[in-house]
Length: 282
Length: 267
Image: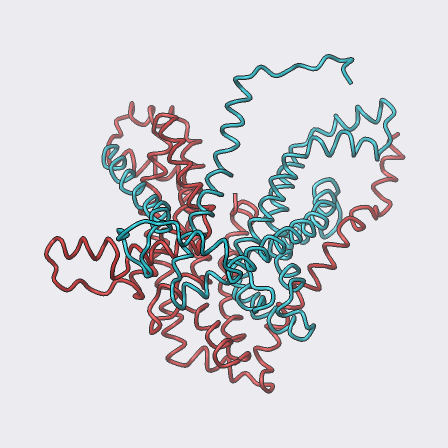
């Protein structure tokens, strides 16, 4: 028995390879090759040179777009945290019926196409929308332009990405042992100090998960900034699309795409080392 | 702290809910541009959606592409998941990671890649091209759901069947597949939704001939914000609501109706 078992493990088993082969070949042809195509185009279009990288990394326009993208992603992440933490708290510490209704709402938002949610913000913030009407009602004669500004695209992105943050924090809060909180209270911790030293550290893994996810998605966000943002303050993905659609500048577009890809992968690699990438999506 | 969090929480509920529900009154509005509250109500834009080929063709394209993507994704992912969950071999860690990679790459990067690569293969502006690209993007989510299911699978059930004389094929068909059915259904559903909602790659490669619904919506919002978008948004809103609420109701019904228990001899 023992011998046959060891022989089985010694012999290279071809089953897993046979089962993996179709997907492996598929991913090679339809994932790795197109990605490699972007990498190659970034320094061969229209001729072999690193000129596009030089332009992307040192040109003031591009630097401004990179800084803008990072600042926006950081701001959106912090806002999602500010919005998501209280809601996750409400869900984790309400009666089951309330908690379930909020969970239903967050799940609804999560599964609603972000094109739909982008359109909704266009209605809400439009010149004939409720927010402008409210501003006029409280006596502001000439309300500021809300739509097609950095404000509108940021607000919509916070709304679209908040469910990722909420789900991650909620799943951690739900698992906190109430005995831990009670024992902290019995030792004299209360109010802010209880929250700061006991509750917050316990929810840190959820915050980390949610923040990485929101930040990374936001860095590469195309649709919402293009539709709702100001054309003068593009984010990186929008600028990449613009270069390809308007100017067919594949070299420049690919060089920017590679920078975006490398930054994204660096963040995810650090995350993977600490937590494991499969944990990120839940 | 507690009361502060609760109040903040309720405000956030409004912030999350308002944009979701506003599409319903908007879809019934008779205004030709974005205006809220609507000046009057009618069903004209519903009629417009259900009769205009400019909207119906992309809808049909999206359904077709998402269905084909789901079938192809499952055909590739199911065997691969069995290999990765049930076998140990060299390079497994790398293979596990590769399964998730399409999720890690920003879609705009993949979009350029497909645009150029499929251009050379004459696959741009074809249904097949979009299906091939979407399958790649659906692999991670289908794998995550299915592998979680398969990891929780009690293999003793298969061993029991085999010790009673069932062949490996019979065991697979009569034991393994039925137990995995919920996982298979959910991962298929996720693959379908991933493809149905995918926008960025579709914008770049679907063109006029294989135009998907999200691409059409994107173009329409960018150009003139056709009020029909509110109709589609409302339909999608209710589709999601039904999709999420249905399991609750089915579950509630099932728990009320006593399950007919099957005796050992009932075949």
